[in-house]
Length: 121
Image (cartoon, rainbow, N blue to C red; front, side, top):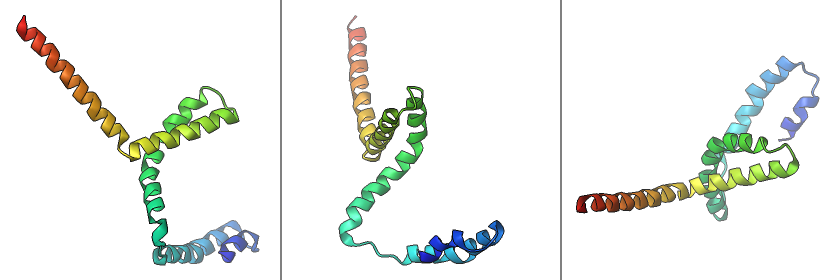
């Protein structure tokens, strides 16, 4: 980690720094990442963050763009961040799937009711 922090201050041009970083630092970081062990008490939190990451990745651009039309203030940025995380959490927990199933059941019941009314006529 110290080598990574010291790299920008080394007397190297851009190409040499890129080569050094790619050949020495990245493999070391990759090795550290692959050999790391997660403490058992952190597993639930990491699983929750893992479930949140892909929905957040897929939905945040639309939410941030939509909120940006309302303004570029700090308040709007905070609102966009909160909405993006909340929406991703809803998707990650399967909340949208449950809502869609509920709507489908409700629409199915309504359709069945309408068909029954038509058959009675």
